[in-house]
Length: 80
View 1 (cartoon, rainbow, N blue to C red):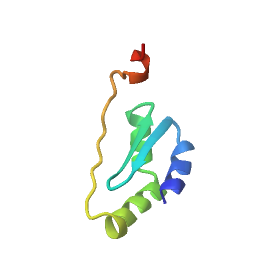
View 2 (cartoon, rainbow, N blue to C red):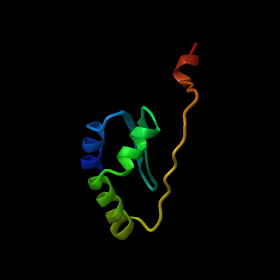
View 3 (cartoon, one colour):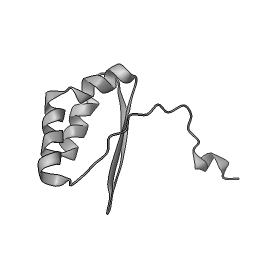
View 4 (cartoon, rainbow, N blue to C red):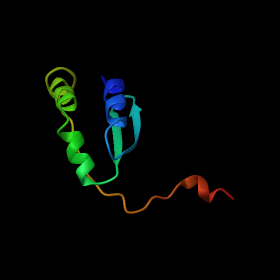
């Protein structure tokens, strides 16, 4: 399902990319151009179906955070 959602999200207007980590705790961060793009993704019927499956089948709990990234520092830039 995660692969299907990534393929779907990548076709949505305003999609910028995704980062994901899967071990004991699964974390996926998606990046969007603006809040309107986030709302469109939230309201996508296939995405809503996947979220419902997540609630009923895969996850006992989960969090959704919507945040604005003001700046980013890449630690590789500090190698000297």
